[in-house]
Image (cartoon, rainbow, N blue to C red):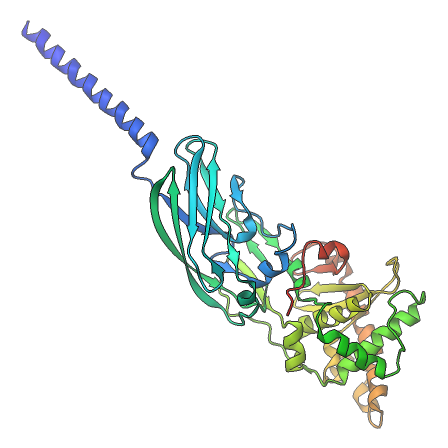
Length: 396
């Protein structure tokens, strides 16, 4: 009898223990008290690029791909919340506090699947003027409050860096260690709608090199080339100087960027490097309906343009030769600088224009395989109508 009582006691203890495990498991399954409620996430290593936001604000292009396949909201917002649903059709409310770069916003989402990790991109009401005027990287604290099924999950804060509008995102490495090339953002610095362009075109017409700009309507390659030379000539008269500045303060193993002067910056400073000169000249070409091309090789960029509307032939220019350069640096065997003595400004301008085409075409032909390969640090980017459906000028 005593043995039977002991066995019953042991059996009761085992049953109670198992019941505790089951009930505890159900509690954890439903409420997960030991799991972190949510976290603030992003795809660019804690960096926000105004140029990327401004250039895609009115387009449907998704250049920066979400890190997770299961996500909600608009990934172009750049800022995300990672949260795990509790039960099916959980209702999530996300409040993002105001910063100098965006207003306070409230977004609501339905998480259809139970116990599933979601990456949610809440609505961000960007202050586009503040983004456009941000000339230097600036830290901001992003405060996010989350509710799930009317239960407050608390507030979290993440410090991110809003980069300068002059920083062009070249590429980034995602969470799976895959590199994404985003060189298409160079198109954001080609600004064919800049108000200053009309003044520059008037200056070009006053040279009498051409009496009007008609793009490809003249029907001849020499007419196209004459228009391009008129642009070259007036930029040279503005006494541009070559400046090699292209580095940024960005220090990251996730994102890669290059400093690019906007149209305003280039004209005001009268300084350009190869990228600045390329996007500046491409802006003018597109303004007169000549289709430009941005060509990138490792450590260098130059501009191209199509000679006809059907794009059967193209030409290229080395835009760094617009500035006050030593031609012997480009053609060391020809001693060109000595031949410039006694030449008028227009004569020198014409010589450098022709030599610029010669140098850039040789550069293109030498690197043509890499340029069209899609490999890292190479690019052949036509500033076309298709590109403008994805990337708009940043408007500065």
